[in-house]
Length: 98
Image (cartoon, rainbow, N blue to C red):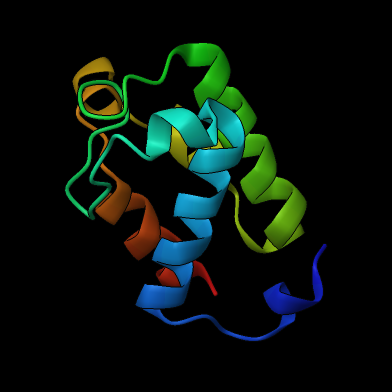
């Protein structure tokens, strides 16, 4: 777990961290062409496939450790919720769990 995770991050810091993880997963060349916002959908706007979403969730787990049960949270969603999942929802979830 990174040292940053020990301190409570605010909404903007979590958003920036999630953008960093997205960049690491899908590549900087793709991210440069996108306007990533809190409303960005993982499947529609970011066009992330299931393998990329799994890689993204692994980065969250590696950073926050047991503090955030991201995989468990995702597993409680139905298919429509997963398809429409946006970055803001994830940022808010992480902020609540800290």
